[in-house]
Amino acid sequence: MWAEFNRAMSRRAIGAALLAAAAIGVAGCAALTPKTPEELVHDRAEQRWAALIAGDFDTAWTYTQPGYRAVIKQRDYAKRFGGAGQWKGVQIHEVTCEAERCKVHIRLTTKVMLPNFFGQEVNGYMDEVWVRDEGQWWYYQAL
Image (cartoon, rainbow, N blue to C red; front, side, top):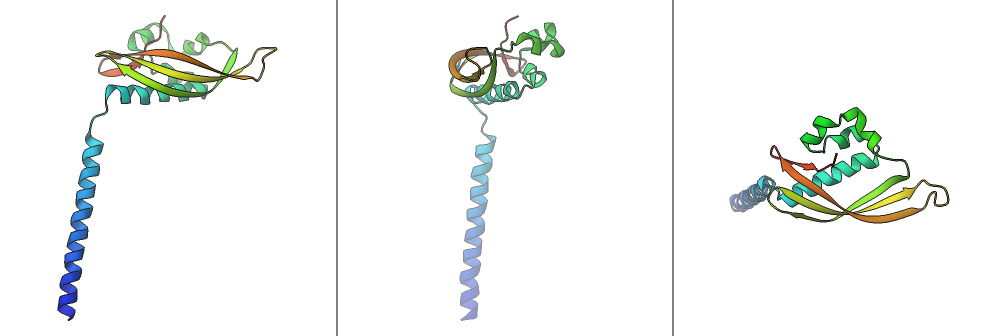
């Protein structure tokens, strides 16, 4: 009876081990699937906006295209932004890509810092352009 019980348990253990190995294999394959350009740009746009909302202009600057960074130095990047509003949140609605260019449609929530409207939050929609250069996706910042 014990021998029969041990055989049944070992079959279950082997079955469970095989099932676990298969699950790990499937999860590993999914992790190795390369992201689409839309997914890559979506992630980078979110990261850039997280830096801007946090006031980390040094990090936000690193998402601009190499040609822009060659002209506008990191220490000067924050000077390009005014103080009329404080960014509170961003939602990426859509990313559409062509071969070397993507358009990101975002909703930006801003707290107004101007007299007569101080403290009010407004939502605006805008499109950003991202370009691929040197194998990476960059926010296209006009000079």
